[in-house]
Amino acid sequence: MSVSRRKLFGAVALVAPVQAAEPGAIAAVAEAHGVSLSPERLRVIERVLASRKAQRETLRLFEIGESVEPTQGIRRK
Amino acid sequence: MAEEIYFWAVSELAPLLKARKISPVEVVRAYLHRIEAVNPKVNAYLTVTGELALRQAKVAEQEIVRGRYRGTLHGVPYAVKDLIATKGILTTNGSRVTEEWVPNYESTVTSRLNQAGAILLGKLNLLEFAMGSGQVGLKGPARNPWDLAHSPSGSSSGSGASVAAGMTPLSIGTDTGGSIRGPAKSCGVVGLKPTYGRVSRYGVTALSWTLDHVGPMARSVADVASMLQVMAGADVADGTASREAVPDYDKALRGGIKGLRIGVPTEYFFDRVQPEVEAALRLALNRLKELGAVLVDVRVPHAGICGAASAVILSSEASSVHEKKWKQQAELLDQLVKERLEAASFHTALDYIKALRVRTVLMEEVGQLFERCDVWMLPAGNPAPRLEEEIVGTDGPGGRVSAPRPDTLNIANVTGIPALVLPCGFTAGPPALPIGIQFCGRAFDEPTLFRVGHAYQMVTDWHLRRPVV
Image (cartoon, rainbow over all chains, first blue to last red; front, side, top):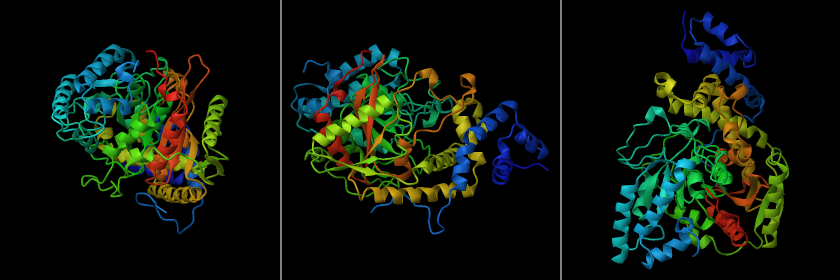
């Protein structure tokens, strides 16, 4: 079975945001799903995951009230 | 005036043009000579539209002679960041992907400036698609006129450098996470990120629809106000351009700041500011106190989440904007552009929506902040880095990865409030590099920002200093 790159990364990001930053994790998961990634591409991906890991975790751990909706445009008071 | 014509303020130039004491042709020639002399060192311009500028200058001259004076910007030159479409003129976005693109339409901002009689000098250097690295660039990076080994900051690098070096009196930049205000700070000029929707984005290559802004840059607050007067307003071609009435920004400069409340952050925003910069900022605040302003302590409880939310929104939307290029022409993209687009692959829809909800939280907190003050002072960042220290992505020396942008800038993008940066000092050096101060305001309250900035510039001379290039 082969899946699109986006679906692959989306699944990795959702299920294992921390583990995805481990070296070799992306390559292993990609190979298991029949997705071929060049060494250069893997290098970029792994560095991106590592450098943005803290930010991703900060956002995902942030508790937000259920009633808070996205705002279109800007707010005025 | 003893100073060379290419360093005159628009507020000085315009009356002379109107009174026919100087011709637009003479002004344009002075700038073209300046560009020819200095651009090989500063690399602010990617395209110089010299012949067109002279033709437009002659037209302007004739109109003014015949009494058909259009206003403050009639006969005044300007230049524009090269991701803003100019009909029939090369618009590269600083990228090999679009290095031969000649738009068959005009952006709203340049159309308005042209209708006001302003004269286009050329297209300015930038970071690729407003998100590339600071070292590569289509024709190499722009350089800081105060020290050519330093960066002018980006992504509106050419817009900041050209104004500082006297290669144009006015420029247009764009700001998605500080890209007008960073260069303004690093180049010692004035830059405004207007309220979201104050200026039409039609014809401007998008980076992030939620965070993108277009704004003016000049050597004085008064000149920035003159430019915004022409640029601002509703636009049928851009559904996000606001119908909010455009006030008289020139009138807004007057009135003084006695009793004006300036909010000063008590936590977070000064955390990464260098001591020398903080000292200059505090001195500037004291100066404003002497003019009658009142300083008030303020805080944004969840300011620390801004960077994360901004990063997710920006990379997700940028990835959507550039999806086709990324799939089909990735080999032509800057390393940092590829990295930033790649990052979006690891965001889920839940991440993106949460980031938009965080935006609401921050808007609410900033709204409460403005119940305690009239303008909000923030640092504008540390002085310009050396060019080789600029963010380059994973191919940087030693494999350095891109660092998050300072949240002192992107809080205004995330919340959509207007933000003005102006010079407030220089580092001891060497080299002596500009230090900038930032003021944010309530939505559509650019007038109060101009009032504060202008009052400060009337009692200081940082904006009158010139680099020797």
